[in-house]
Image (tube, rainbow, N blue to C red):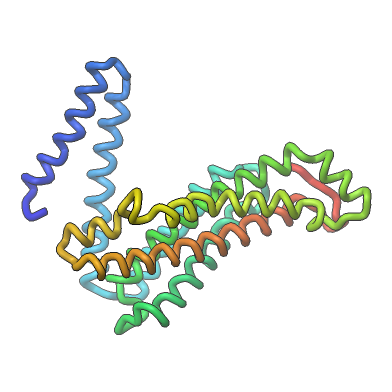
Length: 254
């Protein structure tokens, strides 16, 4: 958009939505207004921060911004899973950091090949979208696993009493949790371009990027999301499983 007036007109959509909520007595007016205000404020702050980062191109500044993004994502994912499991924040944060790092290193070296490894034009947007998807995958798989382990104590202890190792006793539960964490990403990949046009691709098209270039970038991003989410869910579920057993191999539900 070329002028603030266009943004004002865009805000008209939310004004109409709030009016419709009031007309239909949905009682969503405050929620919609708050969401609109937070969206504007948060994105303006991010815009100014990114403008400064892009201008300075300081690797320490870029890494500091990525560390903040990782910390926020890890806290959000931990809160969605459980606050009772010990060391869960470190498990989730470490898993997301590893999944994102491996994905970015591979993509930067073999696919994008920027002039410098810390090129903010590529590193920050890609890290942001990967972290967001990894956060959702970690939250879904972790919550599913914690809930299943807490509700399946009898079955797990039965397997243990019959000679199964802790890993064998919960193998199916962990597998199901990992699958659950990957479902949103896989579903998106199945219908991308047929049912929906992802936000990254849509933004590029609106900015005038040729369609084939936009689709190429979108393919890279989808592959990155699948890989990073798989690594993250594997590490998160593995870490959670270790917290549910003591050194003697006995189940310790939380």
